Picture 1: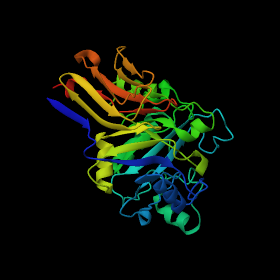
Picture 2 (picture 1 turned 60 degrees about the vertical axis):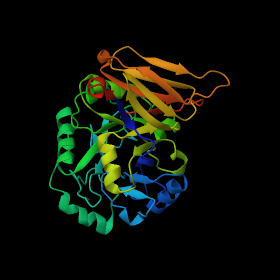
Picture 3 (picture 1 turned 180 degrees about the horizontal axis):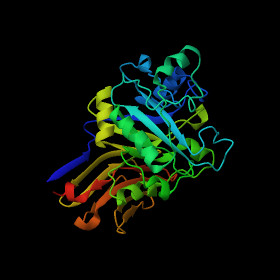
Picture 4 (picture 1 turned 90 degrees about the vertical axis):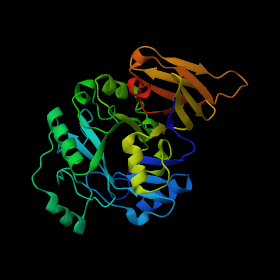
Length: 334
């Protein structure tokens, strides 16, 4: 029996899940961001400005949509700046609205909102109900729980930049995904590709997806990381459904066309690669390497019931990777 996981016949839509505009500390307006990304083949964009939610549906057209979203911080010392206190731990979370018209300011805090001004600031006062963000496992889980209850799904951002490690993030519950690559951090010299964080969550029994984002504050940090959502058409509902159900992969460059399981083997078709590999829950891994003078655009790997889960990656000649979601063998082979 053939089980299709990613289907080229359905089609893909390319998007950036993390960026900033002049509504917070970005250098480009929302209009400039749309123009940049649309000109480079993107179909959707999440403008995740800091700690106050802005809807950008006015930018949408037949070939481009915006995801209503924001990035929220929970810091060890709320009154201090991470740019000044370089050793302060912080948890950064992206909140994405399941409905585009949901503009509720979840757990709004004027202490964290450094960017809204004038009439906008006055408008947000109605959300200042005294909620206190607490930097602890319990406090962050409370924030995530409230966001989920209010119609958002939550990604955990750049754990290395945030100076968080397993001790902190192993406590977090209710997350939709973890950001395994952050392009702005990478281009600024911070090590921020860490697929192992995803494995940490999975091996703790948490069904969490992986994502990537540019986190661009200026044009130079743009166009370096994207997700490809497998969806029948470009609507807000279809993109959100694809994201929530894991029908997408994350990439820094390589493209994955098809992924399926048949007769106990996983098959992948992709753009030309230097290496195609498989990771499992345990130590069993496998890889196919490119032979000189020959294209490497497909591979297949045996699956075993004791693999737990598997994830496929594609690496190109420049070292850029595409990663699928993790799939659980017992469910796939059932």
